[in-house]
Image 1: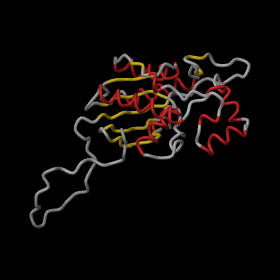
Image 2 (image 1 turned 30 degrees about the vertical axis):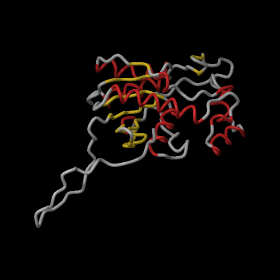
Image 3 (image 1 turned 60 degrees about the horizontal axis):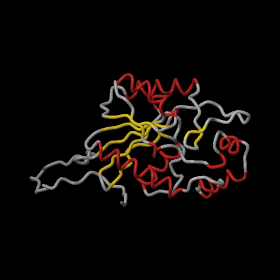
Image 4 (image 1 turned 90 degrees about the vertical axis):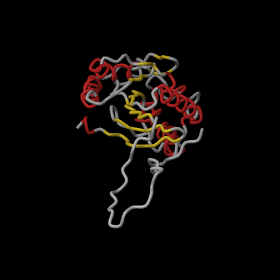
Length: 236
């Protein structure tokens, strides 16, 4: 199903305005039945140690949150707790579960697992190797960002694979929660893929989400509308 940017629909009954009528600027309005999806990147995770690779879950590195990451999770909870939220989603990786926990406790909601929002599979660079290669200036790491392709890493997932699964995940979530607002705790790579789909942009245009930052889309099928990217005001 195609995605495109758009604004709220113009009211059907436009009619003729009386002489002298003043028109305010049109404001965004949620389309009927649309779903607002808040995408929160997990808090900062523990540092990678080359001598002790992260444990793997479904082939993906599964580090815990760092102390700073737990603090960021509390700040996300304080920011979103006053917001009307109908559901919380996490991935199968514990850094999203730990980031969501303070908000879930405040709201009394049990997070639901959406495996298809899990981080991009990095093949032979899983378990912490990706961080090491990027920070040490590996030439292949530079090529990944120049070409905007994860699958330059041996065994890594393709952009097409990532896009297909996150599209399916967001579609399922929106179908379950029509007319509602939900929050999904996910990962930098998959949040970037969701926003690229919403905007029809380059694959890596939105990869740079900060830990615990909030991005927002509105799913008004068949359109996905980008409403916010990388809001970190609660972290400063």
